[in-house]
Structure formats: C-alpha cells, structure tokens
Length: 69
Ligand SMILES: [Zn+2]
Image 1: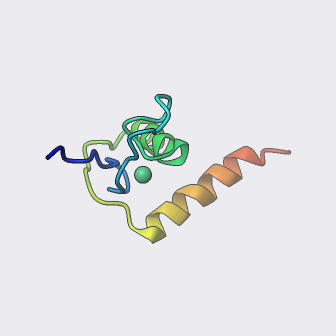
Image 2: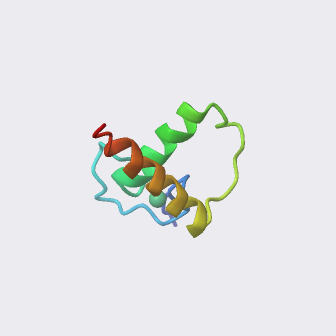
C-alpha cells in the first residue's frame, strides 16, 4: 500500500493529480506559505500551522498586495 503524500504545510493529503507547480504542497497557497516562511528566516521552526496562523499570513499577504500609497 502506497502512502499518500501529505502537504508539509497543512498536512492535507496531496492528490495524485496535483499540479507539478504546487507539488509537494496541496495548493499554491501552501506553496506560498512555504516561501513566506523562508522569507521570514525562521523556516527551522517546523510547527503545524493553526487556522489562526494561516489567517494571519493571509492578512499579511493581503496588506503587502495592497501597497497603494
Ligand atoms: Zn496544504
């Protein structure tokens, strides 16, 4: 029995037909979160992301996106 790969970010099962662009993450969002962690320079902290943490990251990404000074 082959063990289905799981997303290293949210631990969700990664579908076999996941796009190569996002593999091994379950989605582009989780891939971005991974990049975000690297950018933060604290990737060494391997802790499961809670829904609160995900929301926090999304908020920060939105703020960065709305840079209409
Ligand atoms: Zn994920």
